[in-house]
Length: 121
Image 1 (spheres, rainbow, N blue to C red):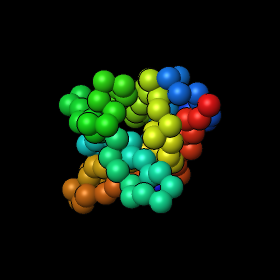
Image 2: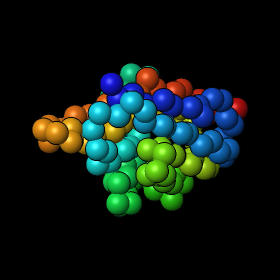
Image 3: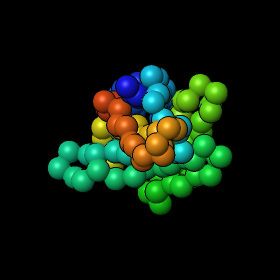
């Protein structure tokens, strides 16, 4: 069935940049939106940014102006450009996709495996 393949995580110094990628494959539904969530150690998972198939975006206040989400609908891929990274951005970043099964209109959502972003000097 559908799966999300993430890449781009790693270690970066404060003020540095990373770009995360998330590609959907084996899709069994029409994607409505894709987004990024993150979970820092000892904290709850939170929304970072989301983008709909039409291009509307929603960013968390904590990353606004620093992170930019974008997508390539033809490739079912979403990106997260992360600039001016701070130590507090350290977390496991997980890709998320939601949509509906074409035949039944049943709502489905899929999570990626997560990629670790570590911001440290």
